[in-house]
Image 1 (cartoon, rainbow, N blue to C red):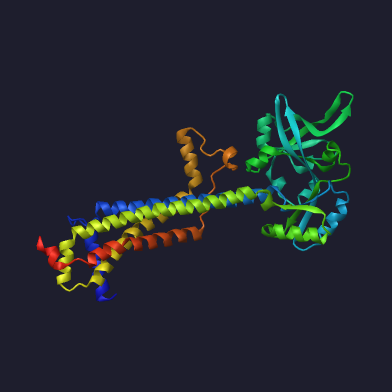
Image 2: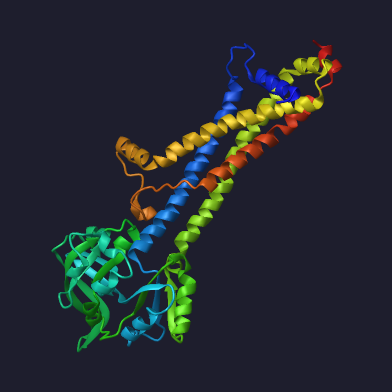
Length: 417
């Protein structure tokens, strides 16, 4: 370290100390550093929660749904076995399974709810998803053809007040014509298991049956609604399912998991961008506090600065002194904020549970946030962005005070001393 830089560091450390020279940073300096700490901590925690939502939703969605689907444009698919065999030969496709999907009403006693009924072949479904891993009280094998068993989402079962072993009534929209008019088709189903994926939207709306039973209820015969695909990379599902449809000669309506849940991910991305900007302003406000503190320090140390100028300290060195002070204040706040932010973000679930226990209330409702718990995933790039933001703003905060100090005229400053 050169003599000039060493002098600037010593002077910066001297100016940052309280006037009593007791070795502690002044109160205003501590307030500035604390403001930066809070801003950095909040930014890290909030961005970690947004990342957690994104990661958790993707993992849960992919664990209970197929990556892409092929459905008929003009109605159900007839020769689905032939289509399934052709699809399995195409690149990137690891599994293909038929499904029936229709809307219906289910009832238990006085409780009635609309559901999405999905008919599957249990032996084929395990090749395209991980639905079986989320079942409680039974297995997919319980959905034998002709048994009219049904697997309900856990939240749906709670709303209907049913448990494994109970019966529910399903009313299909395809009715039967009678002299009294069209009567909905009704079938009694036996609950064989519950599915608890942790994704409220799925657990609240799904009822899963054997494909043959569902086809009978909805009068599809041997046809199916579509074919679900599992790919080697779910993040290229859109392009792959398009290529699959083209390879099969077209005539299909295609969809994939990103399109089906597009609003979720757009909402998360938009919210994260907005929060990033807003929290950057929070840190900017803390940086303005650094400006105010350094300006007051320049006024307080005018005579000291003037004496230093008469002793040969150059304006450039004075600029360096106050730049170091601003960066030290910002650096202390940054260090504290990063450590505190990482501590909170990595222990967020436990902190939320503890707060819920103290308040006696549930703060995180899956009906609102779609997940059972508050997720948190720290992204190193977000931490790096926060660090760079604080360093840049702290550096900018020193420009005006340093300029004021460098312009101090020794004769004028010492005239009233």
